[in-house]
Length: 203
Image 1 (cartoon, rainbow, N blue to C red):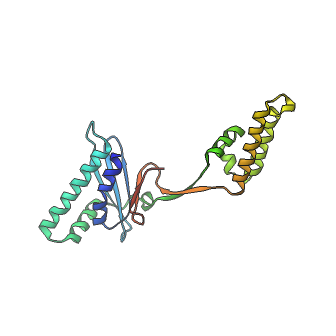
Image 2 (image 1 turned 120 degrees about the vertical axis):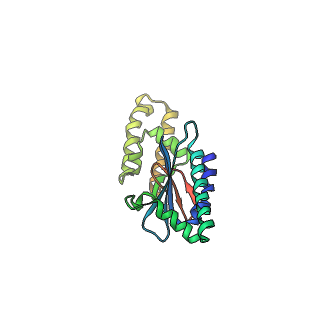
Image 3 (image 1 turned 60 degrees about the vertical axis):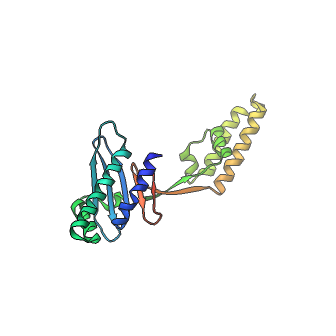
């Protein structure tokens, strides 16, 4: 994937600035790379105008190369890497951008097996019902509702009723020991966390 390759290319630039967190986003007019150094409480925003017909990844690559070129130009003049990085960060600093905008949130999302996903459909359960504190009661209620329709004594299909009973048991087991996956990322933009050294796609 081109975007992942270009984002990995930015890691060299992030290392120069001793980056703690970073985020990448884009609009029709520009690409934006926000950087929060480990020692700072202020974000530096690097931007680059979009080129008509080009992908955001191409414009991000141009931003990275331009910033790297400016960094080495300053080094050639001042003979100091720390001065060059500090100079670029100061030039692009923006105190109005909240730090939380680049700090990834930890989000939990339910994890279902194929059988569990099929059981959810069979019982016609909604996600909010499965995740509610009364999830066991909601699952039982959904089963009773569907059982009235599919029970053989009510003219329903025996095979469908067995499938319904299996779905009911499957979801009750999930409710007793629910599985979740945890993901640290940002809403609407790519995020970088130096603790992992990786970029994560938007939530």
